[in-house]
View 1 (cartoon, rainbow, N blue to C red):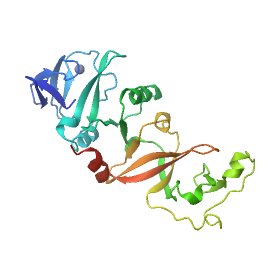
View 2 (cartoon, rainbow, N blue to C red):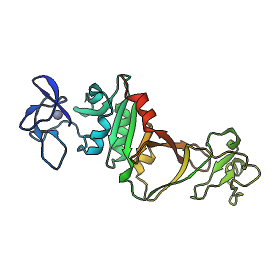
View 3 (spheres, rainbow, N blue to C red):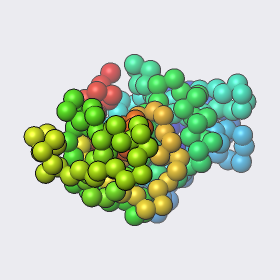
View 4 (tube, rainbow, N blue to C red):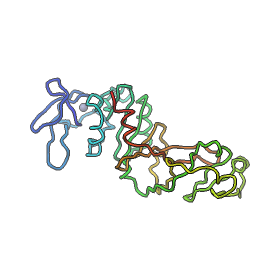
Length: 248
Ligand SMILES: [Zn+2]
């Protein structure tokens, strides 16, 4: 944790200090080694927040983008009888969870149920076999209403009428086809492939933004289709994300 209460004041860890957990109130000790970032740790293993993930520089750098009062906000979970510490909880009531490591679908769903307005920010540099492919047309473009995206790396579509009829050999149309060639390719929507995709993220209900470092985030989006939902990415600048959520 970045913060604990020292004499009743929300404070960062300094060498030799001790304080109390803002959530459960138990004793915490400052850990100020040279390898890990400065943080507070519970003096004894206890029932505080079972969802809490060890903090990394990636977490800390993300938190630094937000006002101090938004960082590490505690909530009591009546069902689990324990505290949960939201990485970020904004004045507008939005919770942002910064997730560096994979989580189970069960835990993902409990957190989505617990926080009314939850947004996930996930460290994409940890993903294995994830590839951003070409830019695609806006999947909500009106001219695509009668078509569905194929689930192949090569961008192509089938007619919705074929999907409805469950046609075994539908026409596979590329974007040179006369019915599709007038549709512009966007600059913000991208196809992707993910070998051994982390299943929890593919079943997310709340908005999920993937951080690969740099100035842009990729929001994971889903187009509902008869032939199977089509997942794609929407490019969003980190600056506009922070302008929306990090101002008090
Ligand atoms: Zn605690």
